[in-house]
Image 1 (cartoon, rainbow, N blue to C red):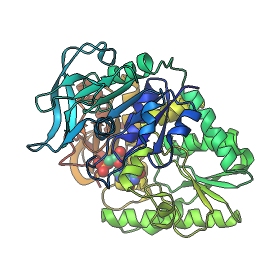
Image 2: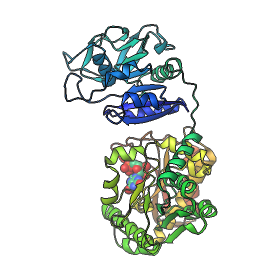
Image 3: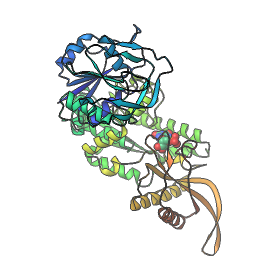
Image 4: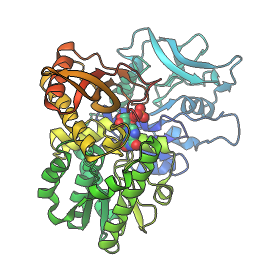
Length: 510
Ligand code: XMP
């Protein structure tokens, strides 16, 4: 199988580079620059090497440098940002600190005609983030593109197939970044694109099988897409030695526990352990109205339930998690730290002893996890589930969480979801749900006065959930949902639609 080496010099977009290469159907491996020597690059048969960006200055002797023998291997290299400067430096060019502040953000790029820029107009927008710049193109290289501040925004030595770009082709703000990477992979490295998600699944299963030989593995299965995909991978790798614990904390949406059971029971049989902890959670939450307290109580109760189940099973060698790459960046924690520190969002044990942690999805982005789920045959409804917070409906029942209020919310939420599924609005919101507010209001039902709860509907459009816009749902859809909720859910007299974006609001109400 064709593969590309992403040689890591400490940049923040390294995973993104690997992901863009995978999107172009070529397998990419990331290795730290001090973990692989040029001879090994040759031995392992890489089709090409990408030098990543990094925060340093090449002329600083403490910065990461690399053995110049790599330039003579006959393997094409593409340097990006710091990687570009390093390539220039190693080849006898000159790198200087910017006279002014540097170049950040969208910048106009003027490119020459060259195979690396095939399909890229002479003028296009690229994304820059640098202070140092290449002030003299190295001997043997031609300048392939410039910007106002960069006399050498791209360069190439066609004889040795060495190329560098000062901008970031992996970032979507670079209009033709995908085209440039495609040209490098296909025209310069000669790749044919033989990689698919199915291959990834196969390799991941092989790798896990090798690593977890003879080991018993425990996975906290939430029914969300990440833990479900991790479960399927691990099941293929270790089969009978996988135990999945699904905790029903009573804060799930309508039909959720049944969906998890229906999907995974046929696969795991008795190795799927469904714990009915509804009473425990509701008792712990009784009388609590403060959002942060609710979250803490739920996190703690989750750990205790999980721990108790793990202990019943005796010694378990490995703990598996569906951690994905954005979780890794956001938490900024290493393998062992996660297991020792506080539970993460899904609620994980802090105390039980495990020999190792298996996180088979930690290099993947959410949409890749979904594609992997499809490649593994996970049902469509599970693959395309919207995110659901660990503390569940407790953060959508404002005020006290009681069984009665939960069931009211569950019904309203199910109606909203049904109406969205039936109407299939375009664009489809990325997350949508109902909230049971603590505002009570007067209504008129039949010929009499009623006084009941207010349900808020929320639908948001977002890429990353860090910022979100409220979705412009069709009025007819909102009208149907409102009318059904007030008619079919006893105790609800009013429905409102939340038109706040994040920021300043958040997606969830608590
Ligand atoms: P907020 O409300 O912070 O939500 O704008 C952003 C995204 O995160 C989800 N969310 C959570 N997920 N545990 C989770 O696993 C949590 O405690 C939690 N709180 C919010 C939320 O549903 C949205 O997708």
